[in-house]
Length: 206
Image 1 (cartoon, rainbow, N blue to C red):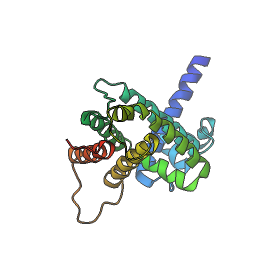
Image 2: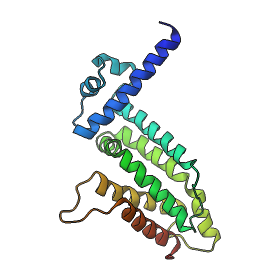
Image 3: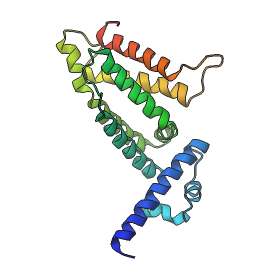
Image 4: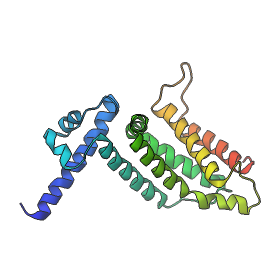
């Protein structure tokens, strides 16, 4: 086997382990998943896992990096708006995150569960979140330049937006929904979040 084919085989196995992990996390939850569950689902030998990852947390870090790359690709799509004085710009970001969360719900839940039980992973996740949120800093500059007052400093305002949208998505897409409540449609959720965030950032309605 040539060096190129060995690399291709290794990449194929790593991808298979990641995809298997996502399926097992969705079925069992992160905390109840064993490494052997992942290798069995992937159709790989148990020892093959450690050729690619030192632990479940390291595999999850790989999935987190994949999610970040997906988010970067989304931000480069046509239609991306950055002026948050425009409600359409806020709506674009809310819709992008809601769709992203729906598509990756099991992985997002696994990441949160891992952070609850592993302090080192929690610190890495916090650093990752801070870097992702910092990318929105320029979006809020449009608000202050327009003479509007943010509810807090730009970093805190971004955190409030992120936590609101993230918690709302988790509640309706993967969490225990309140008994007797009717889940919003995707469009209803996106519109409600957009209005809430836009009003919070600008003090204006639309």
